[in-house]
Figure 1 (cartoon, rainbow, N blue to C red):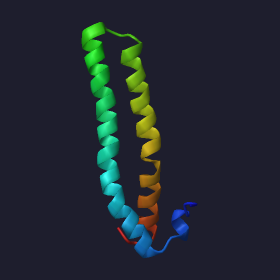
Figure 2 (figure 1 turned 30 degrees about the vertical axis):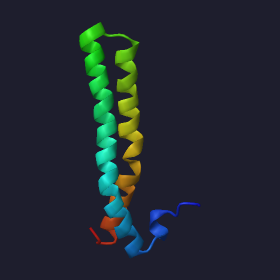
Figure 3 (figure 1 turned 90 degrees about the vertical axis):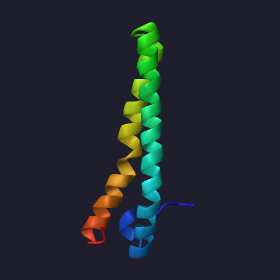
Figure 4 (figure 1 turned 180 degrees about the vertical axis):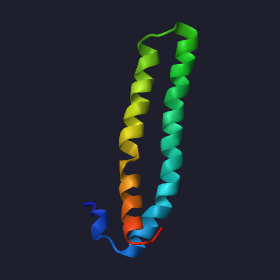
Length: 83
């Protein structure tokens, strides 16, 4: 199934997506926190090594790409005065 662009969705569909995005934020934060925790533990135990750097790179990638849809959704809601 193809995803529609946010500007093609109805107001009701956008509000449903907004409700779903709340749980998505918790999951994204957990993924990033888990990666940072692994990196912190690895730094404490072994110093700066590959197992320290790799989770940090994953956390940065997750932060950049997982929040992209949320920002676009918030912008569309704001443009329609639905927030």
